[in-house]
Image 1 (cartoon, rainbow, N blue to C red):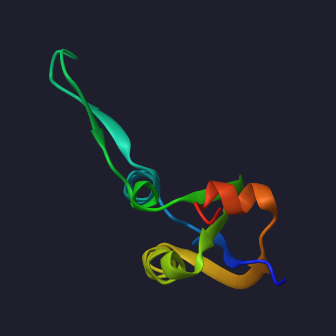
Image 2 (tube, one colour; image 1 turned 180 degrees about the horizontal axis):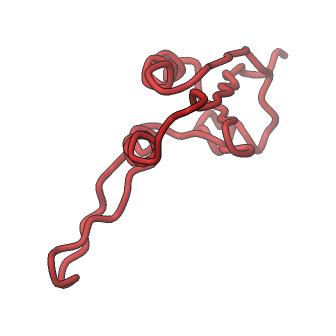
Length: 100
């Protein structure tokens, strides 16, 4: 029986990206905690990766489900060089992506 397939998305932020753009990129991708003026309240601001299950392998390498790959790639292409390949998933990845 063939194993479900996912996509590995590899990305590298464009060379010369300044600190402000990098911060904006990471906040949009991973989300962040926002605090009120006196630190009294903490709010979690969701990022793109909060919308769907994923496996982070190393920096710049994510495994996602087939149906989520297109949205992720469209976002990443605004900030980074992106490479995508279809992969066979192991059992651990299948569980992490909610396919089992």
